[in-house]
Image 1 (cartoon, helix red, strand yellow):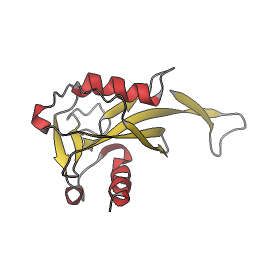
Image 2 (cartoon, one colour; image 1 turned 180 degrees about the vertical axis):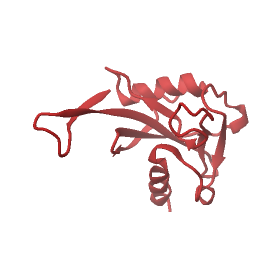
Image 3 (tube, helix red, strand yellow; image 1 turned 135 degrees about the vertical axis):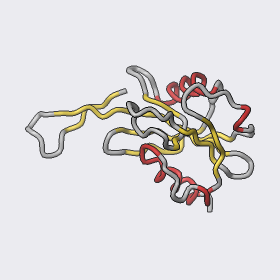
Length: 146
């Protein structure tokens, strides 16, 4: 899904495309969040950094449909019925954040994109290289549950 926005400081009528994404915060009974380590490929954005599971909203797709599709593709997990939490307006995209409890060992979750999955407690996130500005999303999440 793309939205055309006015280019700040640009020529009158000039627009640029701002994409939409959908990501999910999985939380386990211990209050940990599930992140995946991005591939170590120089041609991808944010290689070798931790990331929330999710992806780009395709043309004509809702953010809800996107997160369901992406999680089936990436980790073979049905997230239909997950809760919408918030939409972030990042400089490069609109990011729709969803939330769902998940009580599974990270090693037992199939992973089709990235190097590995891992559960993180709040205190473990400090200094962790987190992609796409999701460090702010995770800080907001943990602040809301203090």
